[in-house]
Every structure is written in C-alpha cells, then in structure tokens.
Length: 341
Image (cartoon, rainbow, N blue to C red; front, side, top):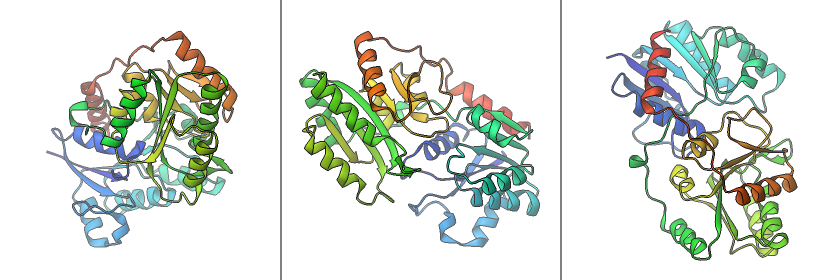
C-alpha cells in the first residue's frame, strides 16, 4: 500500500483547510497509508508539527512517502516543503492552493516560480488559476462530503440556545469564522456586517430571526470580540445573537439552520457554502469571487444589500438543489489525481 503524506493544518482549531485535510485522509485510508505533517498553532501529542522545529522526523516523513500533498497556507512553507520533497527526495508532489488573498506581488512571483516543480497544482477556483497562470493546474473545489455519523453533537450551550430560539419561532441564521481577522482594514469574515444586518432585520423590519456566529480561534483577535459584544448589547440584540468562540461541528450546526451566511471580503472556495448546498440549505454570500451555483449573492461589504437578500430568501422559503456527488465520487477523484502523478 503506497504512503500518502498530507501537509497542512489539522484540527484543532477547525477551519476550511484543516477540515478538508482531515476528511481527505479519512476518505483515502483504505487506499493509502496516510501520514500527516501538521502546521496548526495547536500542537497535538500524536502528530508531528512543523512548529516543533525537529528536522530528523520531518525529513523521515517525507523520505518514507510515495506521494506528498502540500496544502499549506503560508507561501514560505509551501515553497520549503516543495523544494525538500522534489529536489532533495524526488517525490511525486501535488500542491493545493486554497487561497492567495493578501499575497504581495513578490510572494506571487515566488509561488509561480516554485510551483513549476510540482507534478500537479490544484486550485479551488478559476480566479486563483487565472492569477497564478500555471500550466500544470487543475480547478477542483476543496469539498468532501461530511459523514454526520462521525460528527460530534453540539455543545449544550449551543443546543439550549437553539431550543430557545425555536420555542420563539425564530428563523436561524448561521455563520462562522476561522478567527477574527482584518483584511485591508475590514473584517475579513464580516462579523460587523452580520451585527448590522441583525439590527435591520430585528428592529427595522421586525422579523423573528436569530444569528449564531461561531469563531474557531481567538488567536490575533485583540479587543475585537469585546467590541462586537458591546455593539450587540448597545443595539439590544443579546437575545437574538450568539457570538462565541466554541469548539463544535459547524456542519452539524448548519443542519439546524434556515440560512447560512458567508459574508467574507475575500475568499477561496468556502467549505461553508459547499456544505450548505449539500444539505439543501439556502446560502447567501458576498460576490468577491465566483460562487457555486445556487448561492445567493450580495454586494461585498454592503449590509443593506445583505439584509435585503436575507429577507427575500426567508420570504421565498425556497431551497437550492442539493449537490449530487457522494463520498465515493471524491474518493475516486483523488485516487485518479494521485495515480496520474
């Protein structure tokens, strides 16, 4: 059985990339001996993490792999792994680029140069492909269907909150963020937009609606969370908004939701959107990149337009068509990609 080495962040904390790597490993464990190099800030006792800076086990993991699949977020790590795996050990190497937001022109230039060493480059949307201009590139959304049987139940705090909202016949809107982060001075995940939207929906339109916004990590958050909680209190929305950093399965949360939001001011191919469509849940997202068919779009950083789209979706009470591919489709897809290297 060939050995597949997956490199990138792994939960915890949960994020689109880390969940994708975790699901990919589980999906292929019958076809490959799967090994990992973790890049998460949370070091796990049973996984090698690059932050340990221990070189011998790092080199051994790459040396013993037949295929190396790099999914790092940082350009320097992508390049380092690729150079070691390809030039030092002559391995078959595949690189997935989930996002290039915030990259300088020099970083993109370096990335384009080093990616020429990869056997195959996967990008999660056509916008990234156009910016990279690589000839060995394929577009493949980083979505693998979840297995709800393996997903943990929701924490008691969230379950009780959902029950309270349902008792009051409120529609549930769900959104999430990897962490509180600014992009060009604006909230990357649009938490501020969601709070403004709720003020309009609850106080101006009188709708029976509530928002649950889950943040995976408070790393780099500073005082932003306190600022948002203060705004919620000032606008008397404490009974309608749950904004918290809680470790949970977001895919299980969205199955209890009426609408899913993705109000980011930049993006790759959001797992949140793919999962919502997979479960026939209406999803509303900013128009910053090409979104999957079935997504309702609003103008980026426009709380008024987002509010109007939410109101319209609630009034129409329509659901999008479900994703038709199952887990076997994605298993065969990645098996084919690896065997073509």
